[in-house]
Amino acid sequence: MPDLLDSAVKQLRDGHLVAIPTETVYGLAADAKNILAVNQVFAAKGRPSGHPLIVHIANPTLPTMSSFESQNAWQEVLLNWSRDVSPQALALAQAFWPGPLTIILPKAKSVLLEVTGGQETVGVRCPNHPLTQQLLKLFDSALVAPSANRFGRISPTTADHVRDEFPDGSILILDGGACDVGIESTIVDLSRWDSHGAVILRPGAISKAMIDEVLRNLNPGESLQPLKQGDASQPRVSGSLSAHYAPRTKLVLYDPNDVKSMNLTNCSGKRVAWAHFENTINIDFSSSSHLDEIVLPGASHELAKCLYATLRSLDQLSVDIIYFEKIPDSEQWDAVRDRLGRASVGSGA
Ligand code: TXA
Ligand code: MG
Image (cartoon, rainbow, N blue to C red; front, side, top):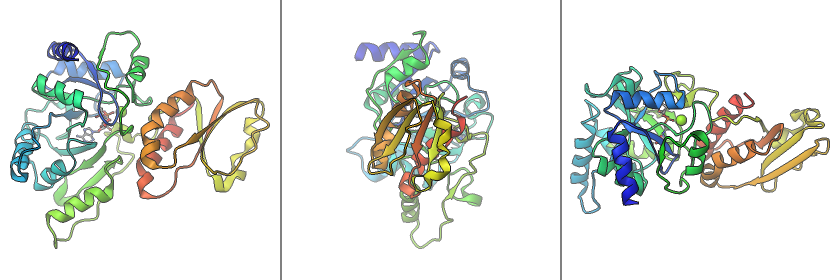
């Protein structure tokens, strides 16, 4: 790997893109300080400008550091990107980084508006993948990295998925194996703390309850604004557009407790795929011309890990319609429910 890491650093220094593994999904990385490289990210993804990119930083802490020393280390690195690193930001960084959390902060003057989509805020994350951490340390600066898929399509969780998205071979791909978490980072907005408190813009593996606990412990006794869910229609957050993460095949989410409303006459003579949890209600697809069936894992983190790979393989079955069992309503399923809902809205296009 050292040779490959050296070539990746060279590519990045020369203003080219490199696909990087993270614990969430693969990213399409470019030098966060190079306008031309940043613009290339938008061009390669087919992503409209104005959708901000997340800045990925190296982990500045060491296991041997005291809590005080590691807070200082986070503060020092964050001050390169944000003009106002609040105690809340430091507490979240210390609790969850490196890890699947993006923190939105007021941007530092030097941060390119191309990175922030013209906004006065910047999203920062320290990813938890050994290969990408090595790369960030060798590169010695930060990388912007949106998910390494074409705009609006399913995020990649393996190097092969990235190759499928960018088949011409022009982008160096660092293969770090299958992503552990499988869906994109939680995004928490701290930039309007005084008026809004912390706002979750995108649910992910770091749950609302986990963030809430850290913020409450910071100032015990002080009343905290309830943690809010952001406005999902906010156009600046591309992951929050209702049509996103979409397979090309029509994806229908159905409620197993209301099978009657499924209108199964739609499947008559059609090729159908059926994704369901174990011990589900049986559905009579006998009018279909062909049926593929898959059983989904019953734990939210397991389904998150294989969700995008499952959507990709369902999409390759050449079926006419995918029926996918509705995700449970509880909070632990928030992130998977969110991604699947968006996948269904944008599907079949
Ligand atoms: O897990 C992840 O976050 C992955 C990996 C590669 O790190 N990255 C990722 O990037 O999902 P992307 O570009 O596909 O999604 C980033 C989301 C977008 O919805 C973007 O609008 C939002 O982060 N975002 C970035 N900066 C922001 C800002 N300043 N204010 C509001 N939203 C922001
Ligand atoms: Mg994305």
